[in-house]
Amino acid sequence: SPNGTIRNILGGTVFREAIICKNIPRLVTGWEKPIIIGRHAHADQYKATDFVVPGEGKLELIFTPPSGQPIKHVVNDFKGAGVAIGMFNTDASIIDFAHSSFKYALERKYPLYLITKNTILKKYDGRFKDIFQEIYDNEYKS
Image 1 (cartoon, rainbow, N blue to C red):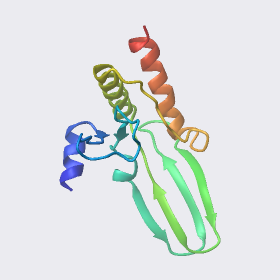
Image 2: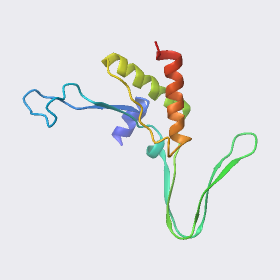
Image 3: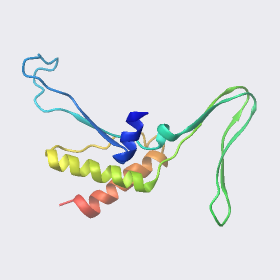
Image 4: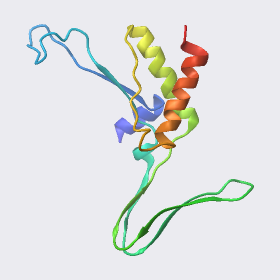
């Protein structure tokens, strides 16, 4: 899609900000500054592989490094039909997302909050949290 092409050129970070017009009444009357949502729109569901599981069987996730032993995880033992998805992201892309988020927040003089589901996706979203924290501690903390 054209949006996907633009997202990939921009490194996957999309910032969305409400357009505030003085002559259009706001639903929240005391709202003076916009809430800006920065979204990491690289890989994840955009480059995921999903499929319909046709019936009973074992779903496995296997990572095969160039040298060494493959890492294998059983995702689910299906008792019947269902759906499955394989999703990924890269440290390089998460690092770019962190820098663009910190720089945007500093430029706009707004606070930055990272929202994840790292209580559920401990490794996946936890990686975002850890990388953001490391970059903040090493490069942006004053």
